[in-house]
Length: 126
Image 1: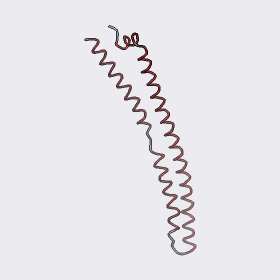
Image 2: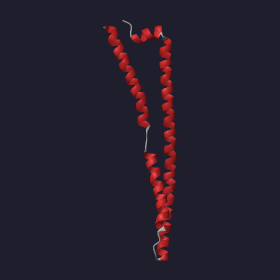
Image 3: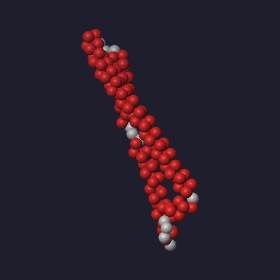
Image 4: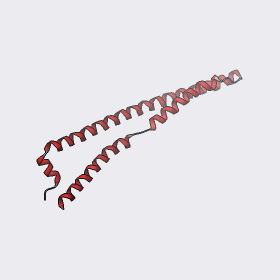
């Protein structure tokens, strides 16, 4: 018995070619999304590192000004706090990854096609 995939390929090669072209489009789309995600993660990591350095410097300056003046002012807390919040937001954004989700879409599509092929073979064997 000839497998249904071969029968379909012989009878309708345009369907197989279109299906393969759709796979190529899916992989290209997912690769593009992965590249964009990695670019965003890299930019967020750079922002996190730079704002962390800025936050450390501003915190040190605030402590020195507070000790030198001998009194407390809210600006000595608020200014470094903004830099710390930006560093935290950048770190959270840099750690977030969608790579597994993007790869899972392609894997699910392949598994579904394999199930359809197995079902077609079972129906052909009967």
